[in-house]
Amino acid sequence: MPKTPNLEGKPVVSFRLSYSVMAWLRHAAAERNWSMNEYVARVLDGMRDWWALPKMIAEVLEADRKGMGLDQYEYIGHLLARRYNEIRDQGGPGFEKKAKERK
Image (cartoon, rainbow, N blue to C red; front, side, top):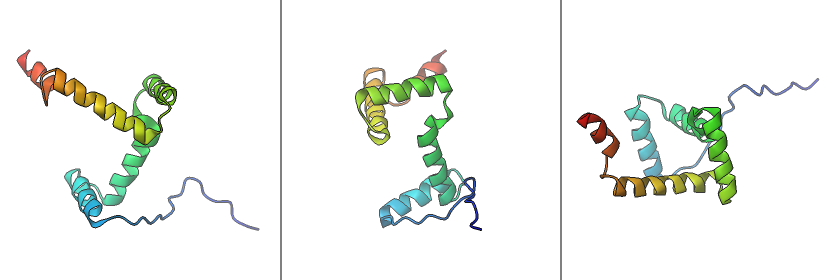
């Protein structure tokens, strides 16, 4: 009788990456004291689950993404561009932290 696949298991997956991406990944993982595998797995989990934001927030973001006709990759790029505008218009890099320090 064939075995039922363990859906909670962790299959081994292989990717081909450029040397520059590998160097970046190695550095990014080391900054958090994670393995490269852990870094990639957490980033993918974050993408899938909206970085563990409260369900209400995640649902609004997902509806917005769909309403704009963007895939997840494009939507994250859109959010980063919006954040750039916010930084530019509200006091430069670190403006939120600077505002808290002034209080």
